[in-house]
Length: 233
Length: 233
DNA sequence: GAGTGGTCTAGACCACGGT
DNA sequence: CCGTGGTCTAGACCACTCC
Image (cartoon, rainbow over all chains, first blue to last red; front, side, top):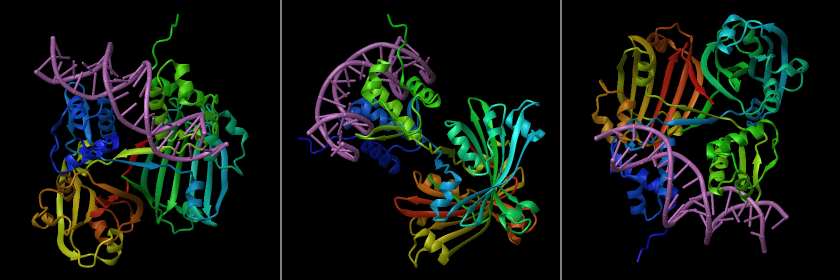
């Protein structure tokens, strides 16, 4: 009689991973098809399908109809990281969050931003600078532009109390976006706000947010050095 | 008669997303259960399950047995980015990739690294510094430690030709890891290698790689400012 | 054309966890 | 307890794409 318990898709994933690690199926090799594996594991094709589909989503297998399933030669590992709200990020350290608006004006887009945001010349933008503090210490400086053609209500908000990101999240949820990370050096103004020396290195995050192919907002966030962004993979 | 075509899980996902956008199901609300939705969409529970399960993986819905499915109040967006090999990253710009080993020695772990890598005192490490160039221009400086207790074969490799990352990927694929990003300023040596001025800002990536709960390698990679890491979400 | 993965159906049992 | 999501079965049809 079979001493085997029934195998679930998680266990099948692990068996497959083991066979990849011990090179039973070396990189570039073709893995048996779903029907054969289902037979071997005494389960249905559906179960094998889920195991292999998830491994493919993780970049470990490459699947093509008719061609079959191959072991990725250079597994492109994907890192996932959550984008916490600045408030959550600060409060997670145990510090008290505090927000302050520095400037707020309405302007036309500078040309470099027009290009980045795919704007029309006449579009008006709400432009703001603000600071985020943890226990009173500078944590992040933010400069942001909001597309008033798309979100006209933003003009009526002072943003003295609620910060732009939190307002936008509840106003227009379910957006898509683009992120960029880089290093830069602090100019005089930024150094003052972040309480660091001029020319000190800063960590910069740029974030562009879209709602159905229209740009909602562009934000540039500056962190004093010492800030680390971390994630697993 | 029904003029409706049959709905697939992708279409059901979109219908659900539409109802979230138009606030039919506002944040925090409970979404109908799978059986009811299956009836509404004239499909099986399996199909609804896949649609809602994927939305939950994306952080848009929150599912619990018995409690049902809720709309996430603050959808925690997740960004995914692939971790390309340095060679692929350089070649993707159209530049010619070139690698050069600077130093290679075997040492005990400095104490800060022992802590980070959870090493035992006696563990020996292969320590290397190297440079990666695109079209002859400095692209990345890398400092790396490899755990020789775990990967003794590394001691026999000169790493004059193949770079450590590429060798490790084919030697020990399927690892897990941890990434950190930060900004720093170039010290004298680094400035020389990257052909920038001392104290110029640099973008730093630290990467720790595990194989089954044991640390394989720790790498610290430095990019001259101007480097941007980008991703969508 | 034929083999492979992609998806759906109809039904079942189970595990978790709120009441 | 018992409603809900989590998963599996057995079978089916379809879409893609390599040969």
